[in-house]
Length: 431
Image 1 (cartoon, helix red, strand yellow):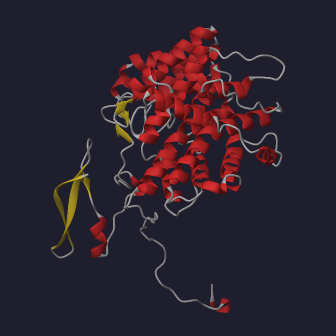
Image 2 (image 1 turned 90 degrees about the vertical axis):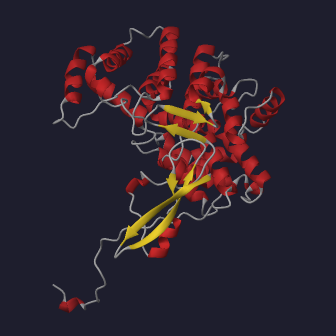
Image 3 (image 1 turned 180 degrees about the horizontal axis):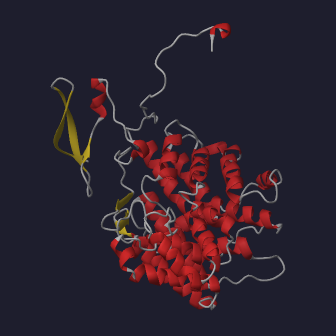
């Protein structure tokens, strides 16, 4: 962060305050408003749409240009050329690993994939039909009760151990949520499999027969994890940072992030896509729904199109589109009614002048929901898979926040609009 002059705020009767302006390595300048408190005023910014809550060296987004970088590397390059473990190392350490660094990192993760056996008892306290995200919040938060030997957040080594444990154990817990839901026995991790293949094994293998991962499907799932690994200061990441600013342990902070991700406006978007496809029902109905989407007097909107941040094509969507077609071809599902419907919507959105002019391109949620369904992952598990991919981003953001000398406990202000001071009145004089 470097100084780039100052902005002058004038208020009241000709009073003014100088506000420093800073530049990052790329992206827009920011106005440092910390000295604004000297005036007795503060800013009003619901949703923090124009507020930088921190400085970060992890992820960069340019929504207008459709760019997403992890540590400076374009997401398209990473998704095409790297696997999720390499991306995890990059996010956590800031640089791509050498061959020996990668081998040591992956070995370390594999050695922590098992969970404490007593943790399995937690699942018995939930109903069989409990939503997987409800179980994830509880079980991940409970990890601090089992792994409290390295919870000093001021100790860099402890933070690294906790990061490894979370990255290794969250897939195991997520798969256990699915198995518990379906009444299937837990499948413990296999350390001879890759990170993505191991998760699919724990989800779908049975003790009765050998499970052989399909490499096309494994690669597709690996890309989903990479594309969801981090996304700057979104709602769940900000929640992790806010919880962490109080000094809460990392397991509690990640559980808080999972809870925030559960919201349908955040992690549940790909689930909403499939629900809407079910509502449309058939290719013959597409025209009617497209017309509704174009009608400015109709509140209906197509799920999975456009993005709050990206005002251009979501850079993750192009990779996910390619992956989607690879999976449908591998499984012979192009004639499946649900997928035919999705592909027709995709065709219209990419060719229709209205969608193009409004920049309503299919986003990553549109394609990831289709891919996850094709992989056999139930809709109830979609957000849990999102949490699995995002865990490394949350850990990295949390660690960066703890290491930041400017870090303070989060304490947003408010614009109070309630009653001014008033005096208590005895009950017999009210009314």
